[in-house]
Amino acid sequence: MSQNAKRLLVAGGDLRQLTAAESLSTSGQVTVTGFDRFGALPDCLTAAEHIQDLPHMLDALILPMPVTQDGCFLYTPFGSNALRLSALLPLVRPEGIVLGGRLTEQIRTQIESAGLRAADYAAEETFALRNAVPTAEGAIQIAMQELPVVLHGLPCLLLGAGRVSRALQTRLRALGAAVTVAARRCTDLARTAGAKRKPLEKH
Image 1 (cartoon, rainbow, N blue to C red):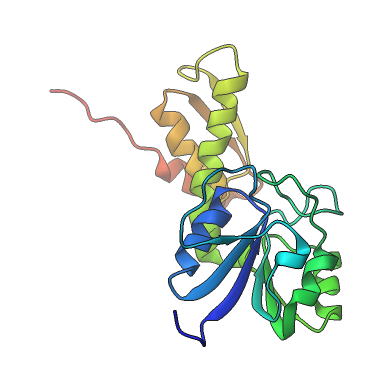
Image 2 (cartoon, one colour):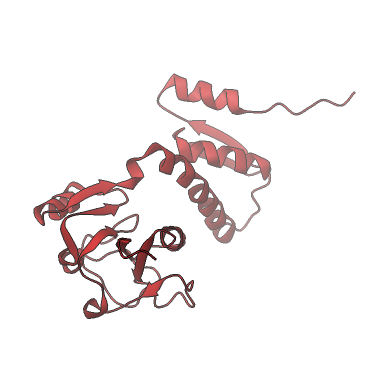
């Protein structure tokens, strides 16, 4: 690894964050925190669970999506220790960048008040399109776990016709669910109707 490699800290999040951290490790020095309950991490990652053990003068701090669920602590489903954003910002070098998913105005202001740049990776169209797939699959997993019936033949109503809805439609229909989509715009409904595939007729 080059001495000029970027120093990155991935703080909290789910498997998406670990996948990103592993990918980033090919071109940077990546430390992760908030994953002590995950188990064995890839060898390319350095884990540190206490503030005093985290690296300083970071080039970038990568936050989860959502950044927080309670408005106070970072979202750390695999972590035992509570992480505050205010404790991590001083680790980033002046004018460094802090990236997070679905940044609120309050969090963005907190980052910029610390003299750092804020970037919302969830606002990128490429990310949003790719993230729709695991989101849709996660919704189906929850439905299969919670419902006392199978999805095959089940009437399903989707509110909205955005990226996640479109990903859900194809997957639910593939499972045999009867899918109805409710949307505000005619263009969304037309797109939904056009995405339906008519089964091939046997001759």
